[in-house]
Amino acid sequence: MAGAPAGSPHRLDAPGERSGSWGGLLRRLGERMTRPADQRDAEELKEHARAHGAAAIDTLADRQIATVSGTIRAVTLRPRSTVPALVVELYDGSQTLVLVWLGRRQIRGIEPGAYVRATGRVCIREGVPTIFNPAYELLPRTGR
Image 1 (cartoon, rainbow, N blue to C red):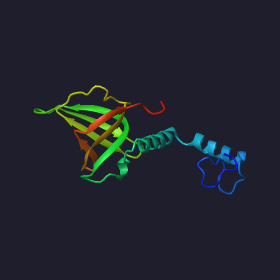
Image 2 (image 1 turned 180 degrees about the horizontal axis):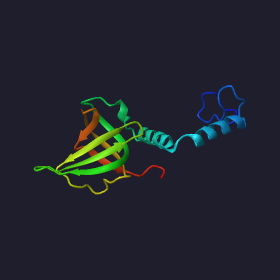
Image 3 (image 1 turned 180 degrees about the vertical axis):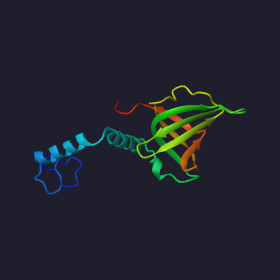
Image 4 (image 1 turned 90 degrees about the horizontal axis):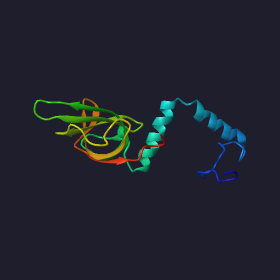
């Protein structure tokens, strides 16, 4: 808000601008409108993940137990001669993580576009963070 202290989350102007100036508000609005849509979407996903208490995927370490959340980008069934595996790509705005459910051909609600929070032990396979047989929860979709 106009006249709010410099550290206030309600401050509308940038540092060095008059409190409550339209210039600061218009500048930020212009920056937001000119950012590529995928960058805006990634930032929104990161904020949503933090709000759900999830770790950013790009900060995960091998063998760490973590909770992540994000949007499902792809779902694949990898049939094996012995055990099928449902493989899901989860994107949180920072990086993609793979969720693998061994012995499953499908899971109701696990589909592209769904928003999921998953918990399990992270392993890094060929440079890609992966969680096998995670506990999961379907969450309401983000702003879309």
